[in-house]
Image (cartoon, rainbow, N blue to C red; front, side, top):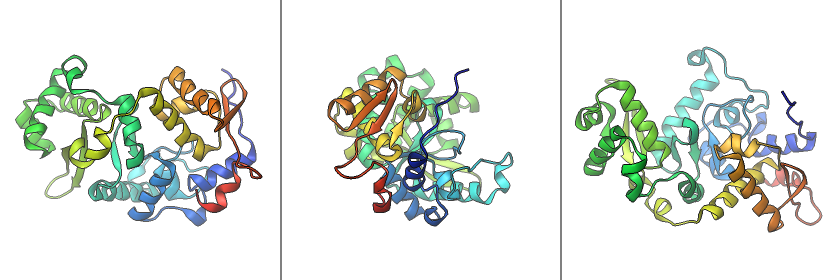
Length: 282
């Protein structure tokens, strides 16, 4: 197996600042979490240092080497991340769902149109691309707009737990359905809503696929400073060819350079390095 390229120390330092991998800037409140997600554009929920990209859990830990313990229920940092996730969902200012490859992801409202252009499904395509179970659930939500998990299972007729979970994952990945609240009493359940009900402006905005690839690549590179082969695809769930197209579009407009195959470096503002902006909190 080929060894993964190492990043220059100054790039790691830049990512520390951008992705809140520093103890002085760790995330402790829902408001701080929303600011963090708005800054980075999109972030995973509970990934750790073993996976690249911004992560709410790592930002809560405030350190580069954060690793999820086996027993996350008893880990205070994982527990806080879970609490913040619930609060962010309830506040409704940041898009949250299981997106590409089923990964729980936060997306800033400004980035939602680009994610939708890549992973969304048009209404005319639903019968061809969605399973029957997913279509049944979607019909109920379009009629009711908001419903708890147990009620939605009953009304849709998809009562088998495994089939229902698979249908919900489909609908989330297609950016059609999102959780809008988490309820713990009298029993644990998610409240589900149509994505359009929470983010109407962002989800109806039309964006071309190539523009979306470029802007997703720009968003990641702005926070990463530099990407290595396969990194953008691994972080976002894009295919490697599409990730490459997005990065090459940045090179074409002068936002990035490519010193080696698959390596892209953010072009520095005049007189500065791409990691010098860490002091500006950008």
